Amino acid sequence: MKKIRVLCVDDSALVRSLMVEIINGHPDMEVVATAPDPLVARDLIKQHNPDVLTLDVEMPRMDGLDFLERLMRLRPMPVVMVSSLTERGSEITMCALELGAVDFVTKPKLGLRDGLLEYSNLIADKIRAAAASRPKKLVPQTERPRMLSTRPFSTTEKLIMIGASTGGTEAIRQVLEPLPPNSPAIMITQHMPAGFTKSFVQRLDNLCAVQVHEAEHGQRVLPGHVYLAPGGVAHMKLARSGANYIVELDPSEPVNRHRPSVDVLFYSAAEVAGRNAVGVLLTGMGKDGAQGMLAMKQAGAVTFAQDEASCVVFGMPREALHIGAADEAVPLSEISERILASAGTSNQRV
Image (tube, rainbow, N blue to C red; front, side, top):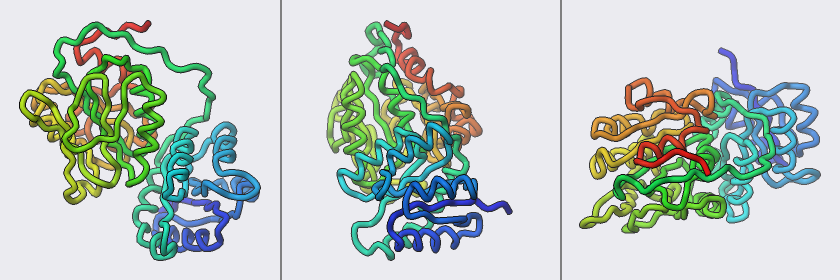
């Protein structure tokens, strides 16, 4: 069996040794080298040609973000960021994902050794997903995407349900940025740990014409607004209160190893909205969302899966297509227009 070859970059000798212990403890991967900073890592990448790089965010001699930007511009490769769970750390991590990092692991605030060892299986899963990903060369965005124009909706009850995991933060941005302020209400479950969705929501809200919120229990679901499930805290469901759609947050146990789970959101949409919903499954590892999307389709919803060529990881969309849950595979660049068209709008650009 060919092992996944990993290079670990971190200024902490303790973290480097723990990452070696964790990664080498899994039979399908191995650490080929470690580096205390990006300048040493640069030479080790040339020497070892690793499959995956784990990269600390804050380091001496060269900042992790600066190194990541240069790497993704000149020699794209799968990168998993190792981030501190702080407000500043979460903002930097969102920037790293924008620059092309596949995913991130958080360092525990207390008990570093025991905390990281508890994350052993999670770290291994993220490295496997990164090894299976398709890193893309970083191309600076010179202008914002043009906003899509719409006619009035055929019904104000139309809702868009989106699920995503690995690679999903950038895919979600690309779907939301072109949408006009009178878009249908959108509910999103993105696999993300607690403490990171606030930064993600703020970034999206600054970029988009629609208003983006971290979802709150009992919140009304309104056109022109986007509701993101709070990471690690609760599942998000669609519910009704009289004539209104509302958000329901459910802190029950993880589903498909995730909380929030895409399946939970999609099943609730099938039950509550039926044919008034549109389901979209974006890039991500695993199967979460596929069965829920099948329930949506059986309830009359239009359903799309992101196509393989534009996915960072094709796991979740592949499963939806395999079981017949998605009506078709759609390139990421076309999803915004397709969901507006499915909600009864024009797809002309302004």
